[in-house]
Image (cartoon, rainbow, N blue to C red):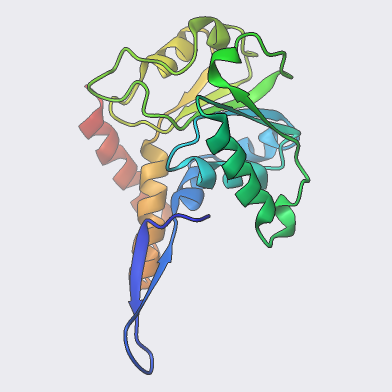
Length: 214
């Protein structure tokens, strides 16, 4: 992925070595139910942003086998760099199987795209304290198909303006808390070798939801 958020020390026979991995991919996917993952296969998807978590999210989206992935960004060079790194990975899953289209974010409204089943916001737009910000227009959200899931990685506030707009338009919504729990569990299991049960995961999620929901 080219980014690390979890580090573990290894010293089986000699000096300590620090091994890093990224749990964003696991966290992102784990937030989607198996039924949702199956439903999203061979559909069109849109990812907004090219920041820190976007590469892991892009790889996760490609693992869902979309018919097309559109990346809408302010900086096309960064999006192109992300695409090149994905295509350069020594992994057959990412070798051009899915068409990837990068477009300027300000052209999202005017670009003709196939109906999207999933829209993911990876930008900080709408995060506390700037809670009235939104990376896309109201019109873009309101034109999405009614079966579309709008997934915002932000969890503070629990419902961003993007998610509120999507909910008011009758769309499914998901905030970043399930991903946060999923990536935290992946890191904990990597560090300790312990396994977290589904029940324990749900308890963690419910406590975070209570903390972040007014």
